[in-house]
Length: 189
Length: 189
Image 1 (spheres, rainbow over the protein chains, first blue to last red):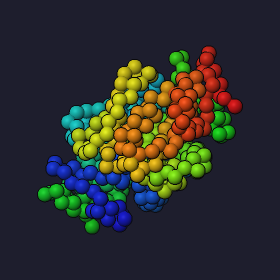
Image 2: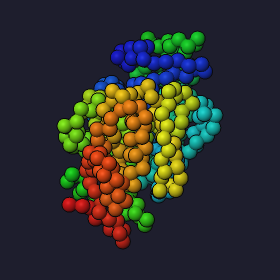
Image 3: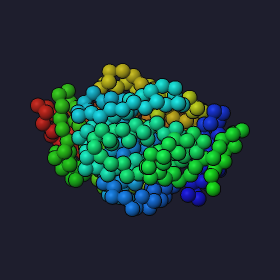
Image 4: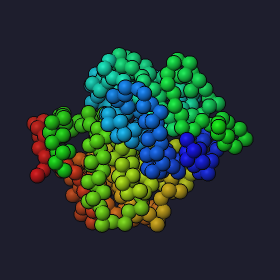
């Protein structure tokens, strides 16, 4: 997606260790106009799927997810990274974060996920794909179907996207980072 | 706001200890259509203010905040509850949570908050007001101005709203819960 790629090149910043910071327009300060355009594009790319629910993980997935849900007119469920004391009928999975070098728990209430659900997963970043596989696990525990997974930015060099596509999942990323070597952002054409 | 009050009465659930669960339409599963209507109403109520930035706290404030920011066409900043390793120029405050009986850190990057900023704080819940006072502190540290604070649901019986209004802040809540005594939801007319 042209406007996102241009924005990454103008405002994104690269740090040693393959870190891309986009915290002035995506995951700390957010640009709602860009966010809406990205949501619209994701909706277009998944228009052939019978989606009745959007799912994301707190926190930076919530903004694109609510806008996608608004366009599709379907409920948006955000999975939680901490187990809330009052959650009933809980579905749980473990996700290993390479960035943080530890596992964390992701949970949703089974009250809001069922075998009738055709789910679109939306998140800001796709890196090694562990969070996405965790969501796949939660949807499968509920007996539902993952129709697709849409990301704003995919780190192509971390291969989570390859793994998800190999599993037959329809994956769309609005910008794919080819490499961050020598702290230079290279975006796939 | 009528549609929100009706929704709280039909779908909200009350638990001992003054807990109101609205996790099937606000803070776990979200209804984007209701969310958009609530954002629109908040924008209307703050229309006399010169707002150039929306601020919220992760995670459940993000959905209403991004929609408010979209209507106002201004950036939306979400404060983080964990200190990210790569955040520069950080502003930090401590917030005490009565629900969780512990303090937590809330931070934003000073790169995105300055003395030029006229800020609208948006959050899902207003209870004792400690999170709101934390945000006020962060904006004041940056030399900016809080123009107002808008909440979806205010727990009137926990008096955070009284405290904020006493400080001269323009506070708007779309539904004010009068009491949850005997696990019965009473909404202020």
